[in-house]
Length: 187
Image 1 (cartoon, rainbow, N blue to C red):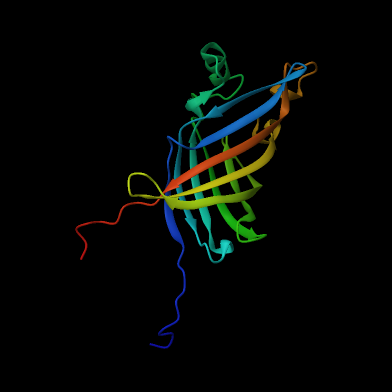
Image 2 (image 1 turned 90 degrees about the vertical axis):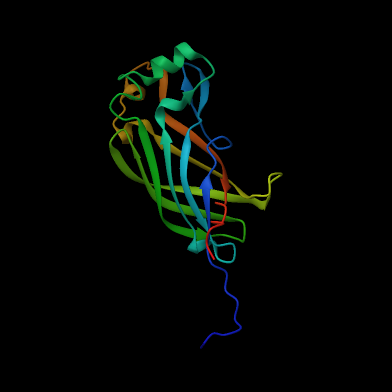
């Protein structure tokens, strides 16, 4: 072998743990701010600890999982006037490029599809760590922040004069990954 004896790290695959991952959002409401979260996030993260630029993400968020802390408001948010979950129940982010800023920070560029519209966004992110969980599995943790305009995705609610909600949405992603267990039947 030409490269015998040279160890190279390969990207590690993690499944997004949707019971420990959150897509939090904040936007203006009248003169204050309202916030909530989407709690059903699925997908995969491929991370190269030695070179973050070789990492990638493919994540889906079930828009029906919106939780603002008030059930009546959540039902209103799901209506056609706002998220239109009957027509668009999922949003998806697929990374295209990762630029490493350090061993634990970088900027990910990719496409966000929301409400039937696909736009390129950037996500500055931090790798929070890697480690063993209490059940013998391996986990990873990540945090990312970005901001989008609702109007870029076909939502007009924040563009109306004296609108009760704003057009600018701040997003914080708190993502925990679980490394899939090795297939015990493989030899």
